[in-house]
Length: 254
Image 1 (cartoon, helix red, strand yellow):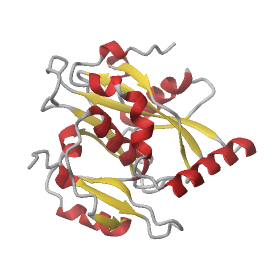
Image 2 (cartoon, helix red, strand yellow):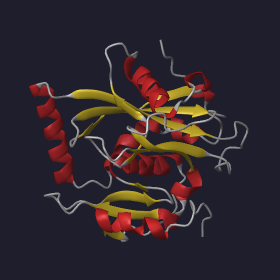
Image 3 (cartoon, rainbow, N blue to C red):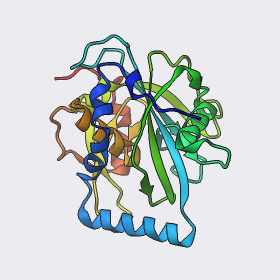
Image 4 (cartoon, one colour):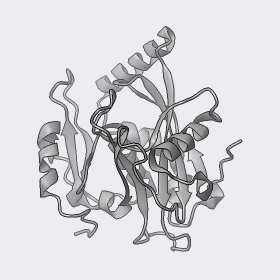
């Protein structure tokens, strides 16, 4: 059985663990009420019709175990993947490692650890599972996703185990997500409801959609977020075109 161990969080990560119950509200803060209502209705319909599918993702932080509270250590990072362009759902999109639940999984934690191991070669014995977050419905895929928060002082080597499923596996510096220069808002022109969500422009990837919403909420509740220009608003294809302008992860803050 996978046991949650929030006490294993280092001092610098403890504010996130303590404030994890506030993540759903922070996640929804930038979502218009009409869009939230549509997502809720779609989730209820999926449950009633049997189309609901359970899934979990691993939100894995790494960094110095002895860094003091109140500041991010320089080596703090977050594990992110980019899905292969040939996949049916979310092709080419940056994401946390994770996927659909299997009957033999030990709950959402078991799903997240199994999927992360399969995708990144991660050694799950090196991790401390800190908390599970509220289940969130993702309309395009029909998944009800549970983010699983974990920490490792050193997760060891990671790689794209199957290039047919995962194009990139990266331990991205948390400071790159914090840096206001890397932040923007992104919308999809094909959506019937014009809705822009938080995104992060990094050197290898544009993190947007569900993953970016979760990361943005994490920065807010952990107290790491810095003021940034939310009026920097791009259509998705235009934002992807900016990738060539990125220079490293730009971890230095103004």
